[in-house]
Image (cartoon, rainbow, N blue to C red; front, top):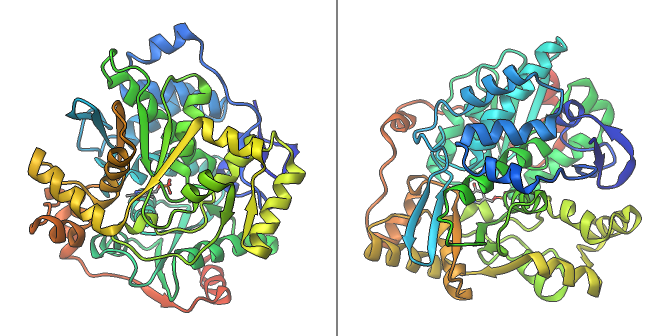
Amino acid sequence: MYYISTRNNKDKYTFEEILLKGLADDGGLFIPNEVPTISQSDMQDILVMDYKSIAIRLIKLFTQDTFSDDLLEKMVHEAYESFNNNKITPLINLDENTSILELYHGPTLAFKDIAMQLLSRMIEEVLSKNNSRASIICATSGDTGGAAVASFADKENIDLYVLFPKDKISEVQRRFMSTSQANNINIISIDGNFDDCQNIVKSLFKDKAFSQSVHLTAVNSINWARIMIQIIYYFSAISQNPKYKKNPDIIVPTGNFGDIYAGYIAKKMGLEMGKLVIATNVNNILERCLNTGRYNILEAIQTNSPSMDIQISSNFERLLYDLVNQDIKRLSQMMDELVTRGEFSLNEEELLNLNTTFEAGSIEQIETIDIIKKIYDQHNLILDPHTAVAIGVSNKNNYTNSIILSTAHPAKFPEAVREAIGIEAELPANNKNIFNLPEDIKNMKNDISLIKNNILSNFRR
Ligand SMILES: *Cc1c(COP(=O)(O)O)cnc(C)c1O
């Protein structure tokens, strides 16, 4: 097995190369040339393992000989030491139709911690082996930034840059990023929206002279290693699900399409499940695409589930590679059309294939508030607004055997929770100090040269 770009399947890359590059030079995304499949008997072994053992077993299939067995085991154990639940991703029964997979027990209370905690260790290992350093950059709609800061703070050979849309994320999200006190962390608010931040990151990578000179590395969900690590909890979910509930539909609050794409890979590996359900707020480009075949960009609308206020779902390109049957010419055309005209269309067969694996639904802000209230009244359980969107979609589409991915702790979104039930969810005790520490944020215009100069002036050889 080796890695290819979605826009060029001739050149071959190792895991180590794609880990550090993040995004391919041709603008495409890295994917394995073929997804490893798991035999039935191996599957039975895996589905009785604990989380860390599943992780070690599956990640090895994708990283091959990049890390020794001992090193991989050590990194996995250290990555999940700081999680406040020993199952890492516990599956909770809500009612007879619905279970909730809690993905928010990491240091910054969002599912992004699960991949980032291990990804940072992998990058650090490869850099120190090569006696190298890197500038890591990510755009965040709120949660990636905090997870990256918690994972990369004080790592010797790394400078981290986080771009976020000014005033468009919650205070708790912002404080998780801005209070680290670490010298190698640079938090930058951009006058613009999330897509502006993401476009700056993409343009920096396109400037090869620049990106090579500062060893630019991406840790957004466009980095394959994050997808790879997220595959684990789909296996963990099925292993915790009662046997009589066969093939649950899995409902995923979706923005950049990274999380649900990991579920798609798990399915390709042989994990049995029902539909993968894309749940969104009113920023529903994917739902519209599933219904009509037309993927067209509209203006992003700010909502109370901000981590999904995204118009371009970057990881969708990885799925498109399969939908167009690996026809990279067609895929490159679609991506060009997206840039020049703001849209592309699937043909009938591609649309049919999309709809065999995926379903979609979306709900409005007010419905999100209603769901948080209803679940609190009925189950005494406080949901964050992203999880509430997924439950709303589950109710709307009448799923009777479903697993909801719960992507954030409700204390990260106090405004929405207070509006729904009049109280706030409490932050876990070891997170409360973010309100006592000073914040360190630079504000910049939506201007790529400003970011470039900042990275250049920090880069030390
Ligand atoms: C990032 C995020 C999402 C969206 O995940 P994608 O992988 O971008 O689809 C959903 N909910 C929360 C809380 C998030 O932080």
